[in-house]
Structures are given as C-alpha cells and as structure tokens.
Image (tube, rainbow, N blue to C red; front, side, top):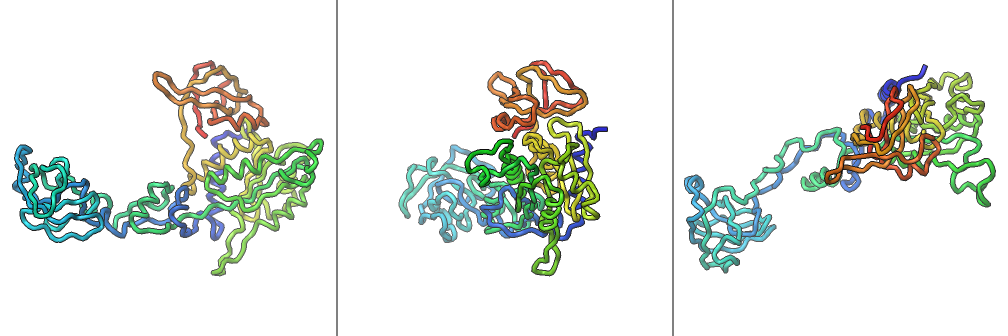
Length: 439
C-alpha cells in the first residue's frame, strides 16, 4: 500500500528530529557559531539579540533647521500664525556635542545632529525667515511649533536592554543592519547541517571524469543530481561536505559509509558527527541493481543500518527510503533528477524549515491553469510550471512546461513554480484553480 505524501512528510521530519536530538553536537543542540554580520543573512540566530544601547542613542534632529525650546504651555496653544524672533547661535553639525541652549537663541542644526540640552523642537529651514541659515548673532523669525516636532527622541526606535531579534529568527539584511547600528560585528548563528551526498549507478559519470575526455561513452550519462541537490541544499542553508558517485556495488557503498559516517572528537573531547545527514540518489526501487536497497536493506548492513524502503503516492518521486546509518539520518531519493528535486522540495526542505528555522518556506499561491491537465488516480502529482503573477486587471495564472516525465531536466531549468495536483484529482480544465509553490 502506498504511503500518503503527508504521512511521509511527517516521517521525514520525525526522523530528523529524533536522530538529531540523539546525536551529540548536532545542529539541534548546537550552541551556535559567531559569524560576521555580512555573512549572517540566511542563517538562524541561536540566542536573543539584546540591545546594548538605545536607538537613537541621543535625541537628534530629523531635519535641517533651527533647534528651539518650546514651553509646555506654549505647545498646547500652538497657533501657526504666530512667530517668534530668535538670536541665531552657533551651528550644530552631525557628530558634534553642542552647548546647552541659551534662552531666546536658536542654533542652526543639521539632520542627525545631537539636540542641545534645553531644546525640544526643530523648525525646518524652509519655514524660517530668512529661509537660508543666518550668521551667529543675527535674528531669525520662526513660526510657532509643538514640543517634539521633528525630533527623534532617544530610544524611540530601540530601547536599551530590549530583545530586538529573538533566537530562532531567520536573519535577513535588515537584521544585519540593526545589529550593526547596535555596534555588533558578528552574531551567533546555528551551524549549517553537514550533508554526505551520494549518486548511485554504474552508468553515471561525474562531469569532468577522465572517462569522458574523448566524449561521453555509449550507455553513460553525466551526473546532474549532485549539482542539482548541492545547489538546492545550499539554498536551504545546508552544506554538502562530501559527494561521490557510487557504483552498483553494495560492499563499495558500505565501505564509503564506514569512512564518512561516524563521530570525531572535538577539541573539548566531545564526540561530534562527521555529517548530520546522508542523502543518496537512485538505487532504492525494485530493480535488479538497487545498490542502496541491497546494501542497507539486507543482512550486509548488520546493526549499523535501520532503513525503510517505501512507495509514496507521489509522481514524480514515488520510491523513497529513510532511516539511519550509525545513528545518522539517511534519506534515499529516486534517481531521475526531477524526481530527486521534487523529493527534496516536498520532504526535506519543509522539514529543515520546521526543525531549524531555515530555509524560509516556499511561497504558496493559487493560480488559474492556462491549459487542461490530467493526473493519474491516487497520486499527488507535481508538475513544472511557469507562473505569471497578477497584473493590472489580470489574475495570476500558471502554465505547465514539459510533461509529467521525471527525466525532463530542461523543463525544470525553465520553470519558476511547481504545480500541485492532489491525489484523487484526475482531470483539470483550463482556468481551474491550483496550488502553486514558487521556486
């Protein structure tokens, strides 16, 4: 019996949650690593960012103008027709510490400059008479105004001691800018999950393999999955630390796993996993040369592996494998590139978002189909599409690109969306509304 997509999504998330909770030094219990601000966007903050200073750190002018004192009784009875003459004091530039404001005086003040003690309002230069800055000692006529007008008060944006970015936040450029304004040079962020990525098959050659120096040998293909999934994992905040093409030899696969999956001693003597996740591509279905299934699903793996090989009601991406090897979570995706990509998007990317806070979830929209589509009964089908957002007097729409076959990598390269057709829906007419994931 096929497993429902939602059921397998939950199984993947729970596998990662359970396995990472049990692995010392894993991304689930990692205390974080300090990273320069410029490198922090796209990473997850591990501890609250508490403001060490107020923002602004001092009251300052919002405009180029004159700093004045408005008494509270005057502020309540502002009549814009009224005006007052002031003696022009020395100019206050940004970065300067001004003298206390003398009664009856109005110093010219620049945008961002510190307000002098005693001042509580700024009158923009264009409202002054004359409308250009006068020399010290001259007279200037300013209209009535209210206390606090065009003044940025100390702490009006951020108050000292307040939590300005909570732990678990997926950082962006604005967070980095805020941290810089607070004087931070780096932030503690969750380390990236370390991934061992394996592509299987005797027919697979890595691009650049010497065996293809004179041209691709007959019966062979170049490995697209490594580049496709490496880029997808990087976009999701994970790091491929090792990647290999593995032949259809179960013993060779087991030797490779033995050399890369386990624990190393850290400087503090605490065992830390070499990798946090193993992903294999291919070798998990019911064929005669299914190397992952043969190596990890039989007696050869011994007690090191605990794997499950299932069929999910998904097209493409039906065959799936999940479990652990030496306690490290192991996910097996089908070998066709589009199937592997869909498996990542449907099962792994959402689990990383839920458990680690990164990556950001895909934006989900509803759009009208530009052409009729059919889907096999009982399967949740994912089709590549080109989404056109709403424009003036135009509703959002999506058109399929390529067909349902899982080898059509060229169509995936031109797609900007994934079209979801739920299990149980076999026919959709043009104009039907469908759920779309924006890539």
